[in-house]
Image (cartoon, rainbow over all chains, first blue to last red; front, side):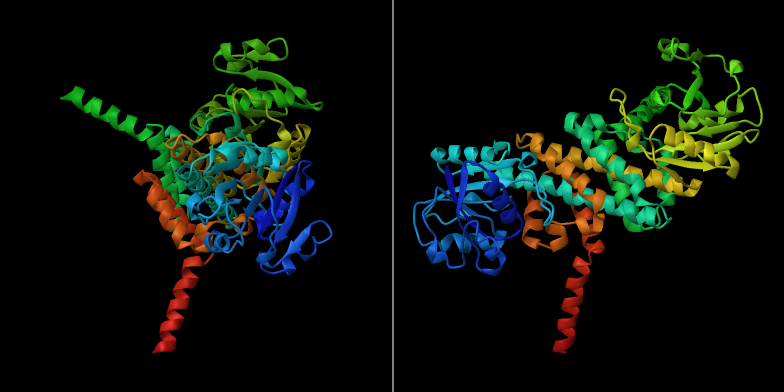
Length: 268
Length: 268
């Protein structure tokens, strides 16, 4: 049995609490939050506290608080030399107070407040200062059904950056498509199956192989028509930049330049 | 029973053939392709031909050929005044030969060559010159399990543009994340559940509501760190442009400008 003390009551903390609560080999010994209100409703299931001096002994202390709070909360622990991990994608391992044995337990997923998340779909990136603590984090991940990956701080920060591309930026492309189709009274529902299929495709195929469309084909007629159709300059800039990016990745524009160059050379 | 003649043997044509073949209320009377080889293996199931003069009478002729071929193939039909539809997202209804009754049957989805596609996940955008032919296209869509939407040529071309954003451009963001994480020897598998969750989220929630992350929060520390982490200028340009776009959508940068302005005004 792994005993856990959970610190914080935000989105990630709440999802972790649920997962730990339902795991057979994990017990949440205490749940701390600086305001009692947020955790109060769980007091029948676990010990909830808002006084950090009351923290009891546990195998691991999981700091699921905002990035900015990690340094200070970890400094405020009333004990030394215990195993403390944070759950952030961007904060370094060494930002945790050095009095403790330090680690990271970063669930790479986008959590919604309301919907419950099956942790089978949540990869956990783990890192520990001391090798001997690695197994505990592996066991903890497995206990909630998650895959785990040993990841360095630099790799984790790069993953966090990559996540911005596949999550925030992708979502903004959905938003732009929503705006563009709304402007012509088109039901956004029509695009939803394509959105899902595009994400499904790269589960078994590299994004490189999965690419299609006018940019990759360098279909100038369609590219021109699309640019004419776009009404907002801001959307046009994004269309042009991502088209250029696709063509660079697939050597489309380069190869047409090369062809022209070859033709000119032959003429002379 | 709806009788169909299918023209073309590319990706869309093949998927439509399978769907029609399995539909109880549709019969594929003939399958034409200019080269016999591509359709030969289906000759036990339907009549396959490579001579356009042999086209028989049917309720609808479905032109699933490349955009550039639509005009010429539709001109080459050895009959007048029959119901002919194309399947393209970008070609106008009036690009079909005016001797025929014209329509469009555009499946908005990304078809893979190998994987079979359940047409429940393929919305069909339909358009007809003559109102009286609309019901036939609705019935045809329903016969293969698809939802159908009545869409004008302008709307369809806008949908095609929107599809580039949610499919090609989104896929390029996946590709960039793949490049960025590969450069640090990170397993791309770690990002796949997030990719899927991001697409799932907007099935029930608007992309506007689904947005999260450092750009929306205007978390300058993280934005700065990310820009420093990015090694390729091309990726940095995309990061900056999409961050700006998110902040414009959510009024993040605007509101901080307004706040400063307010403060200055109060001082003076």
